[in-house]
Length: 257
Image 1 (cartoon, rainbow, N blue to C red):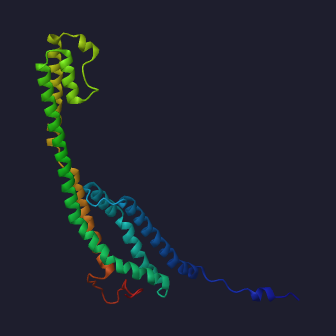
Image 2: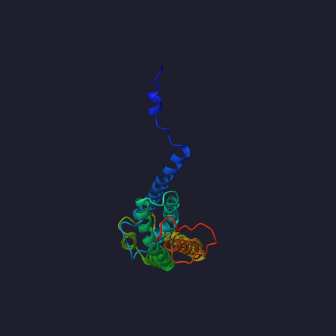
Image 3: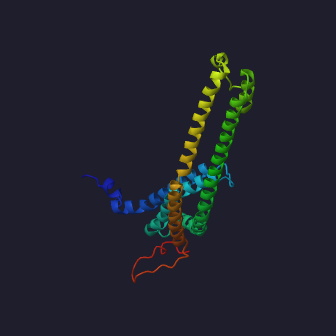
């Protein structure tokens, strides 16, 4: 008579739907942690070492925050979603409480990015413009001194000394120019100096015609994005009013804070 001991000892396997439902909180928790870690890695890579008074560092840090803030926001939103599947999960509750406490600080931080971006953008543009003007002024003065030296020098050696005084020891007349009489060499050098002066003026005009369009557009993008992220994290922190239709599900139900 065949034995049914083995058959009776086998316990029925849980249905696939139950296994999937049990794995969803762990999956969402893992995705949440991954997104937050990627966000922190991107921000810390840009922020370190900190140069708080450098406008270029401020602009780069602000841009990195805005470009990666969606990772942090989505990562935070996955936790209450996981709570719908397992409201009694202690680790999920602890993570949600930690993020809930940080959400208000994050919201205020994104609001502070608005004046920071404006200040850093204006400071960076002013610094670059002032540096360009200073370099242009110095180059223009050197060209004027060079023309004066060419026009007044009586010998090749005198001209060589004055040119090296202006442009360094690597500058000066070539062997062929030393063999050229001063009466022939002077007009040639003055023509070259005038050509360099014309190129400098063209560069000055091109710089004056340039407008900070890219900086303005980037400032507008970051300002709008920072306000939007500030509102999003404010909702996570629970500081903004939430209107619910009767019978509609509440996101705060899984983890009451």
